[in-house]
Image (tube, rainbow, N blue to C red; front, top):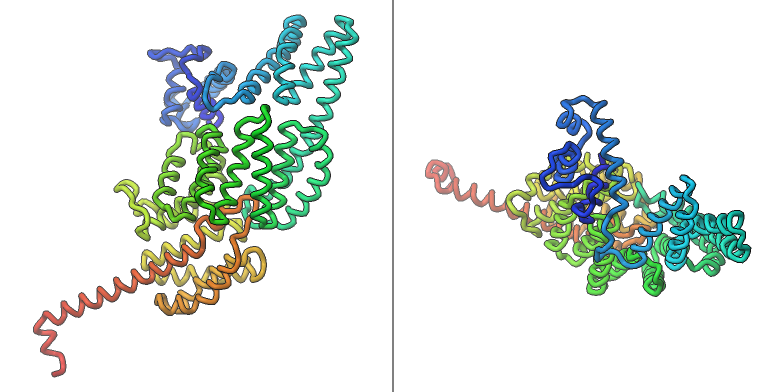
Length: 528
């Protein structure tokens, strides 16, 4: 069902009314149109629901219908409207060249050699200009097969033969860089813990790619080369070096006509993180806005950019701004299409949002009240993060502990902080790249030792907080995620929770005393 939702979202975004392949009509009641409309509006979300609605639960009939419907949607993709502000020339060329290549291959397969050759000649120029290596390779092969054995034009055959060989070499280099990049990022998909060994591997890959990057200045090879350079600096927590890589990449890609907007956006996203972590909030805000204008709303990179912008708001203590971003993202129709691990990130941010609301730092509407947030359910909503013992499980446990403090459930809070103590001794250690987390958990333990009294907890935690503050947030491939809100800010919230709890207890005792003293029968029992 996710594939259908993606196709429908894509077609709807690019002027559905101009796409006639579905037989679109405002008043159409055909099964295809009804199915399209209900999925688009979120009224059908599973195959079981669709089968029951359309065919009374007859699943075989539904599957045949669904396959036919999907074929129509795929055909419609070829008719999407490119006259949209999010498309630059490189992106329009990408769509047109690949569409033409598909047509050329189909024509060639049906023995329409002249038509195929004519379209290939029109396609290869833009493909060369916009560095679409695979398209250049295929069009060159088709044209050399025409001008050689069929037409006998040796000069043109020599040209396209060499072009095909050059394109094949370039593509081989691109594939090598692509595989290297993927090998580096795979370990980060389900675990955000720091991986210093990745830096050494990235450095080795860069040495191998250096001569290829000089020889083949094409967009895709340069993209992977700069992405690997970014990982190499980020993996050793080098903010300045990562920032320099991003600025260099942005400058390079903005100077190439073959660059899609996303080529600049991906480095803007990381630059936002670097600027956030170094306290350059005003510039980070400008870069975040720039990045937002470079990506299509509802795409994976749009969600990633919003995530980094939300963390910037957290660091600025602009919690209302963070909440606005959170609502826009989680309310977007494409949000359910995100991969499970990506949705878990937003589940984590939901935990922060409701913690901030409980602390009185965000004002919620009645239908957004934190009472709708279930703490036990929150722990079950992040199964992959819960397995990431040195990474994303840390904020999950911290949010839970702080929430319990604000709820004044001190017995449960005691148990959670005791569990954090065991957790820290088992999964974290002093002196490595989890040092800030280690210090923060040690500080939280002082709350338990102080029997949840604010002044005693603050005093006991001073040394741990001082040591924590001497170390910057550690930067990894996605640097901000483990500490989306600085531990210093979370500690302040923990102290506020204890202070609030103490005031409420004192107030309750005072009210009880006043009530008893107002009763003559109680006063008569007091010693004179």
